[in-house]
Image 1 (cartoon, helix red, strand yellow):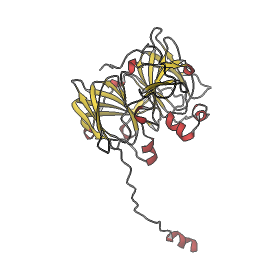
Image 2 (cartoon, helix red, strand yellow):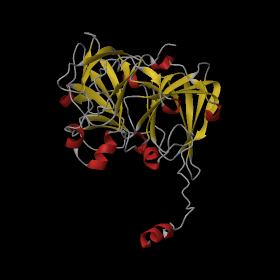
Image 3 (tube, one colour):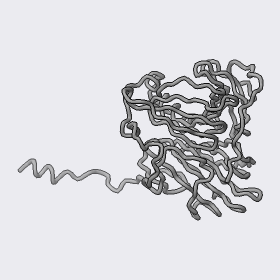
Image 4 (tube, one colour):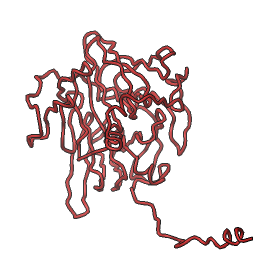
Length: 349
């Protein structure tokens, strides 16, 4: 199966907006050096306009604010033809989908060891382990490369209210990445049916497992990447005539359409409804707390990459792929007050 997302960066003029949103849903944030997109869907990611981001020697657009998200960071950045981006570390978990182009990244955990090189091209998914040093290079001298990043930066910034904590932290997660020789080729079973892997080549072609509980004609592949604890990865297929049943998650999520076309039906608790059509190359972020149903359309099966920030489930102790329906755990008390008489009797003796 080919990946219809492959494309090239837009070469249009830089946006003129320099401040707050103007009601049109697309504006330039001078402080963050991002072209900011609002709404529920960003169409045509491979040709989405980009704006200058001098501090990364790049051009970029951010989709952090789709559907009011506050914990799932999403941005697309360009590696210039034959060029590179500034190397750095960051504490946040990050996963990249390569939208266009080809190149490589150099990474290391320990500063006294040589960099490891991982090559990538359009259609691949690459993980950046927490706080590992990394730098990206474009192998094509004529065309830019585009990387779409999914991160939990916004959650960490809200929790600790410190940019330095995220970008100047000395702690090293050796349990997640320890400059292992087989780190980029490893492919092994993980917990809860997830595939433990750190580089997925041509993710759209990965095999999926039928999951009738998820809906009609639905298959899912789950991935555990980079030792990430809150950023969760899944590839979802909807066969011709099928649908993912109505559900909601206890997580902010983004859906990158890799193949096919369909629609998402959103339904709020007060009865409001809206349907959004989408096709390969679109990025959709169903709003948190709103029920959604994904329906395949046309004669080509749908495949999409779903990324979630599942920190709420982690915090509540919900483990594994238990359900498509996000629900708070039942904690109605079975004990009102603990019985300490046995321990008091022992003390008295």
